[in-house]
Amino acid sequence: MTSSDLKVIYHKSDDIVAREIEGELIIIPIVAGIGNMENELYAMDEIGQEIWKRLDGTRSVGHIVDELCVLYDADRETIQKDVLGFLKEITSRNIITAGHGQ
Image (cartoon, rainbow, N blue to C red; front, top):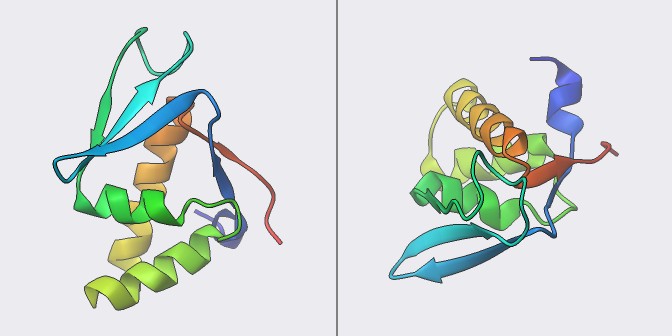
């Protein structure tokens, strides 16, 4: 991980729909090529949902990490590792795309 990783701003894909159902966030692909199979659904846990809420195309990864450190009163290294791992996973599935940092 480099300091430039923390400057990246992510955008949600236009090829998915996200819905909260009974307290769980469900990501639904609306085109082929999202995820490993057509029609695959993704559910996010509480931390995933908190990260997802912040992927608004304006916050850098570093900003998201800062907010989650306050929200969860946890150490930065742990939060940063979790956030970067989560973003790597959903980027690999084309659920989000990376933009450029500020």
